[in-house]
Length: 262
Image 1: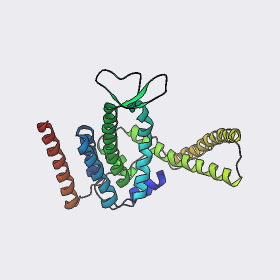
Image 2: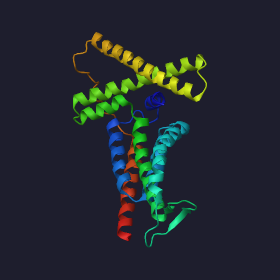
Image 3: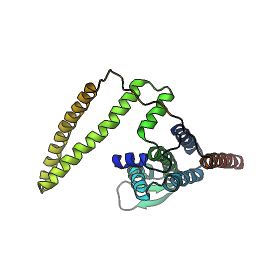
Image 4: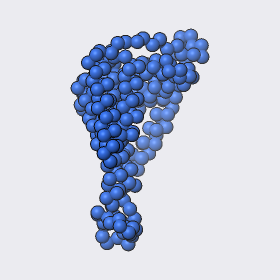
């Protein structure tokens, strides 16, 4: 999936927009996503999705697959948010209760509301991250961070780790393809042994390729500092700027109205 994201970040309709403007817009929307009302968080989610799918022309399948995969981690936390053990407290009736168990298990309306609010906040924050991730290449993000005075050692570590993800993906794909071509093994215990062997081989193969990467840097004259290309400012079309500023203004006014109302 990381290769798909990298390709889409270089080939989208918002590619030529200023990376600094996109980063500032995503950061502002993230702050709003964390603080506004849940209904406005849902609106932010849909709006940022429209920026990616309609404006940047990111395929809906790729966006939906990544968004759904990220929500799986939220799904794993659902039992901890909803399920309560014991007897409901005074004035807190369970909306659903499992009968026939020695320890009562129930779900409360407060738990459902808490899970819904968390889902709205997570979706809004993720949509802001996905906007920046799908529309801005990683190299331009590094240029933005460098312009914001991020330490050079941090930028170099981020660049090496990003490159290391591709090495890890290639090594894992090669091992999985070799296993399929050899037919693999059948049986649960045999699959466990094979998985453990593949994990060890993956670590060795990845470290070997990482050693090759480090040798390649030295052969190209690495002097303990990776020189990043300079930041180049690019204009933002008026229609994108108007849409962004108008949307932010509407969200702020709606949140103020909700505060005044109640």
